[in-house]
Length: 303
Ligand SMILES: NC(=O)c1ccc[n+]([C@@H]2O[C@H](COP(=O)([O-])OP(=O)(O)OC[C@H]3O[C@@H](n4cnc5c(N)ncnc54)[C@H](O)[C@@H]3O)[C@@H](O)[C@H]2O)c1
Ligand SMILES: [Zn+2]
Image (cartoon, rainbow, N blue to C red):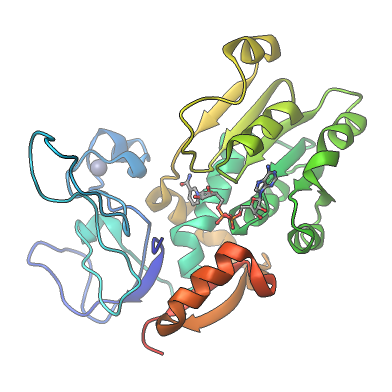
């Protein structure tokens, strides 16, 4: 899914303000108008402008669907050129001290990781568990530590990813060991906050098992299941707070920018492969099968 991209402005629409040809810009993974009810609350991912859609996600109208017969969505950035609607409010100029790769992370996964940890309410001294250690989960480990977590359990079945999380200061755990370890570390209570970064029912079930009564599960995984892996009764009995959803990356990327500019976070460990767009099929295969220690691949359409 070609959601995050960075580039240089080649041409401008007549209504674009505040941007010039030649500007180096980064884009969040959704366009946004900057002025509607949701944008004014910082929820740019739910902008109500009709052009404010996901990059790299084209949806054909269902047969017989009323209204427009045109597909919805925006073409993605895995191309040499991309059209950005609502450009004045969607794009952000990249400061000189921020690299293209750092800008890419801001447009999606770094912002998402930070959003996940903040929505979990991670606070000083908390015990946090991160379920899923792909690029989003690994950055969520860093975000949880940044927000003051005293202990971070990092849960994934892939040993190499657990090892990377350990380098980020987390305590690595296989999924089958996680519940016992979280309970042992907290007098049997469970984690104060669980950050779910997988998008699968098994992972959500594990997150719910790991959280203590009256704790918070913050989920950014994109789920496709029609049902829940736990019941309303389970949720009641735990007094659990559950938070879900898409990251408002346009709002977060400017908030997280100072962290990137501090150069203190080890982002270099997240982008493991740099490939030409011509090698895109191989890159997707590597990512899918987690080959060659891949975490995040950057595709360059000009190479
Ligand atoms: N909410 C948002 O705005 C937003 C933005 C970006 C990505 N996402 C979503 O975040 C999720 C993570 O993205 P990613 O790129 O890091 O994905 P990824 O596929 O690279 O990583 C997922 C990791 O979860 C692990 N995993 C699978 N099942 C598990 C389980 N039961 N317990 C523990 N770990 C398990 C896998 O081994 C893998 O390492 C995806 O669902 C993605 O679509 C959401
Ligand atoms: Zn809007």
